[in-house]
Every structure is written in structure tokens, then in C-alpha cells.
Amino acid sequence: MATKVFDRDTLLDLTVNFIPLFIILFFIVGYAVYDPFGLDSVSRILQYVLLVAPFVLLAILTYLSGKAIATAEKTSTMYLPGGATVDDAEPIEEHEEE
Image (cartoon, rainbow, N blue to C red; front, side, top):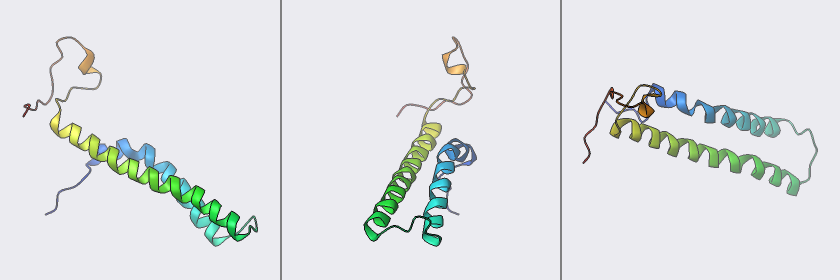
């Protein structure tokens, strides 16, 4: 059985990036299906570059940040939310330094 890259909590953290990805994807598909501006080829290419480039960069950023979150959750000491700044806080999980 293959291991999951992201667990449920990590996916919830990444939801903030999924929403803009879906919005950009909506406009890419919408402009491919319907041409509301009647642009020439140069303007059309520029339009798609300005939509596809942020989509690809945000997708890469989302993946890399998800990997960083998942790695930090597996290798760092875990506290309750807000507990890391409290004096004498008890960790809920401790990981040994290698």
C-alpha cells in the first residue's frame, strides 16, 4: 500500500492555495471555450501566459509548502495550538533529534 503524501490536516492547511488555483483554472477553461474579447493572436497568447504562469507557479508552491508542512509535522515536537509559546508547556508528541 502506498503512503499518502499529504494527510487530512495538511490538505486543510493547503486549502488556502487550492481556491485561487480553481479560480485561475475556471478562467483558463472559460476563455478557451468562449472568446469574449475577440483578441488577435498576440494578445491571446499574452492573456494565456498571464493565466497559466501564475497557475503553474502557485501549483508548485502549493506542493512544496505541503511537503514542508508534512515533513515538519513528522520531525518536530508537537504542541497544542498556541502551546509552544507558553512556559512549561507539555508537548503532545516529541521527536528525537538525529
